[in-house]
Length: 107
Image 1 (cartoon, rainbow, N blue to C red):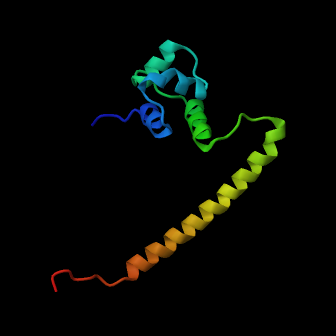
Image 2: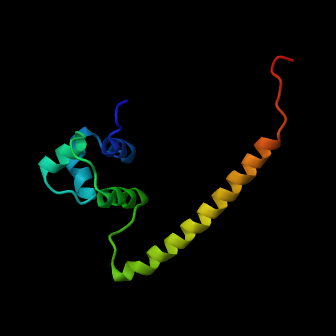
């Protein structure tokens, strides 16, 4: 089974095209054409820091600063509320699905 190149997948989902590899690399803090090429070609694994940077860029976060800290904390609290609500909705949906009677399609 072929391993998915998450950097290429991220680039595609973010709207970068193949000629924008270096632009995508710079967005996540990767310097150097050789390093960017290795990541793009799957010859080098992404670090945890680079993966976190990809999440931050995707979420539209700004670089951390003392002035931005409180806003980030508030965003984290909002995300926790959203996660709780999604989990509750999923549990409700699962319970409804489990209790539903099967429908016969051949009747």
